[in-house]
Amino acid sequence: MDNYPLIADHGLIGDLQTAALVSTDGTIDWFCCPRFDSPTVFGSLLDSGRGGHCRIRPTHGPYTSRQLYFPDTAILITRFLSPSGTGEVVDFMVPVRGRAATDTHRLVRMVRCVRGEVEFELDVSPKFDYGREAHTTHLTEHGAIFAADDLALTLHAVREPDDERLAALAVTGEGAVRGTVTLRAGQVRGFVLESAADGPPRAIRAAEIERDFVATVRFWRTWLDTSTYRGRWREVVNRSAMTLKLMTYAPTGAVIAAPTAGLPEQVGGERNWDYRYTWIRDASFAVSALLGLGFTDEATDFSRWLRDRYEEGPLKIMYRVDGSADLVEEPLDWDGYRGSRPVRIGNDAADQLQLDIYGELLDSVYQAHRSGLGLGQRGWQGLVGMLDWLGANWDQPEEGIWETRGGREDFTYGRLMSWVAFDRGIRLSSELGRPAPLEQWRAHRDRIYAQVWDRGWHPGQRSFVQRYGSDVLDSSLLRMTTVGFVAPRDPKWLHTLAAMERDLVSDSLVYRYDPGAAPDGLAGDEGTFSLCSFNYVTALAVSGQLEKARLVFEKMLTYGNHLGLYAEEIGPTGEQLGNFPQAFTHLALIDAALALDKALDG
Image (cartoon, rainbow, N blue to C red; front, side, top):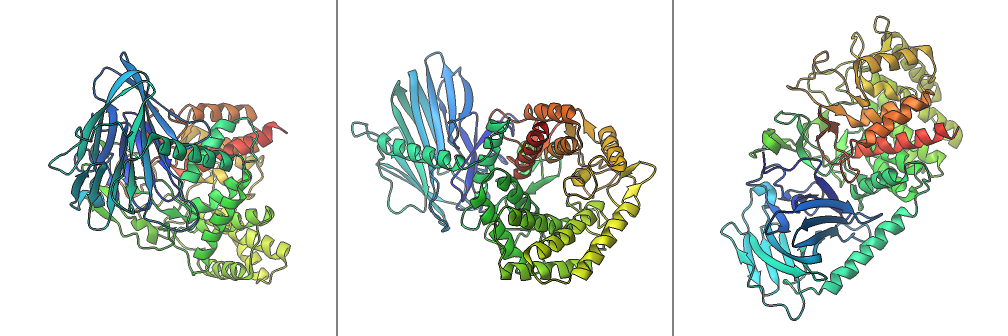
């Protein structure tokens, strides 16, 4: 257990094509290359022995560590404070310019002493292809090359002309490179890890990585300046927006659900999934959230990625970042995070039927239209074909938004979002003057509306429920008011909200559903779901319960980690659980802040 830092004890860096997690002890314990969904190079977060890592920390203790982001950037600073001196490791990835996919990525680890004297130990131990592929290590005068069959990492040393040769570095029997460096106040050293480098290792002057640092600061601050958000929670909203940007694959505009795989929803349990892919649902929510912040370029890119998917025919629920759909699930022979097994890569849920994605997609297209983003003829034809398919298929059991593995059911949320799909299609046709079978669409919309009110409402619970014929509550239905299905002060909605508060809300934290009351085909329990907690804030705000909404929101902010990042879930003692950071949670945070600001402003 001691070999595994807490999930929350990490920061995220990235270059818009891949990303890395850096723990508070200076270890990069998760890094996939050359893409988010590529095999790992460093994966000790899921297997401390076989996963691989890249560590920089003081050689001697005692010391304490602190982490922060350089203001308004995605540059991470890990500080080490000891009686003899204070040192810093500044980690960032140089943003890849343009939209071309590349195998070349530069991860900078700048090491500096700001007070006294600090000796740092360096340990670079890659394990390629989830530790399944052997590699060779070649040490040179200016660094090292780690070479596997399909990928090579080059370590360029940061050094000055008067430095001694790299005699302090040595290659271990497992192909790792280790060494030490002693710095006095004002000195800067470190190294750059480059994939698919053009040439051998070279000595890099400190001034060069300082220029990379300045250029990266400029990139992030220029991007953040395009935000139109001026509300009450600017700092946390900006951090959430940057986190979403870090999880965006620039060549296609796809936003991944999380940069990690296998982090548990229950420590020691089996609910360990691979989230390094793009869900139609997440991408749809991202369009709306980023439009709300004024990031029209990103919203346009996400919309284009969505259009490319629905023009291909019936949707899958998730895709790889390049749009392909090969996500075969397999277990790794890894120990798992703190014994949480199996560790899965790939995701068999890709082949599930989840009807809600059609409503989320159509709603995002409609929001994009209302914000001035165009919809071409090809895109419109794709939407018409998609709604024709939905018209023939909406009234059937499905797996639902939570990707349960206990069989298909008539989930109320899937029907609700099918209603949204037809409603937004009708609005788009009318507002754009586009041809469509409106009579059929209206018939489907009205039939779904009547069915949800008839079969989705449970008189005994005095609430809308998870699935037809059940009395189980489900917090996915917190979105009923925000999509316009029910008025926010309708008595039946207020009863539903009260029932959820009774059965699913614990202080400010919200459970998705009760697995004991609604078996989902999986063993174990889970924590509260942070997406739902922020959706609860939005539901309270639009229902006029502003004092409660604001208090719940402020409480939720206390559950973010030291950098303002959120995993998927919150455990009983406030710990972060599940894949980290999770796009869904940060999208819901943005939506909640926007809704609260709007309601508080009257």
